[in-house]
Image (tube, rainbow, N blue to C red; front, side, top):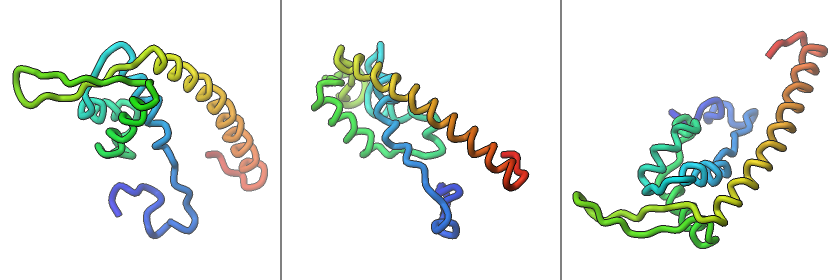
Length: 133
């Protein structure tokens, strides 16, 4: 099936799919840091984080934005432009900025754990199988 990567139907039994969608939240917060944006623009901007390979659909993004707004991390307002219909624009709140900082701290810890795991895996494979990545 196109777009399924290494975990297509033929490899499903031996493949573990990445669960990257939880990472959408800090990406959206960072995109809203210092500038407001509307949902469709945010969806396009997520490609900068690599989500073109694992696309996020608009319903997921809008659901997440609604959740962030309910938690007072993001606020929105209607922007009536000169051309086209009014669009809802989102911006980061002060509380959202603090939450983004806490995400960054957790990601730093996660990076360390992942780097350690990958290093140990590489060593293990070199010793037991003579493999290099």
